[in-house]
Image (cartoon, rainbow, N blue to C red; front, side, top):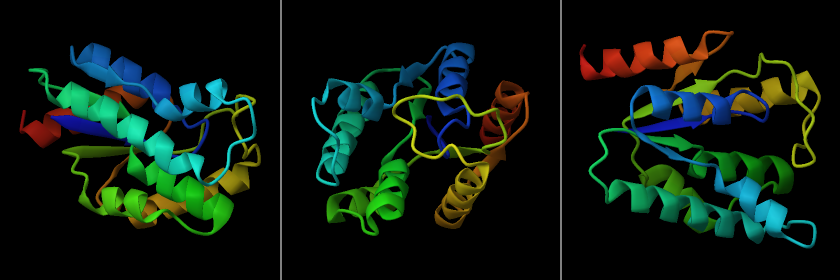
Length: 166
């Protein structure tokens, strides 16, 4: 089962993804944007976003070749799409294609209701900006399960067990 954990900045995606993978004894696929951006010796540009998606896709594909029952992805092509459209007003065709064609069994959408944690890679400290970006995710991912509040792991596990009919 491939699970996508997504949402705006500082919404608990990475923490939830790690916790969920651990709770399910699954594989955690880290967000590749962070490592990519840390390694850059210049400001990023729109041209970097498809490259970040390529790294994310490769990490997912490698995990899919294993026998793991659960693969938990800390973001996917939807993050690159939203990031690109919000920042640049457009999205690369390959990322858009991946957004429409890349399958996930379950999508968990983290609400931006957690306390903002400053980070040099984050660009939206204003809560109203993060709520507006969350609304974009809701529009693009109508079947996603909203995860909010302090008991995110319990909500995510409930969503997994419901999906599996347990």
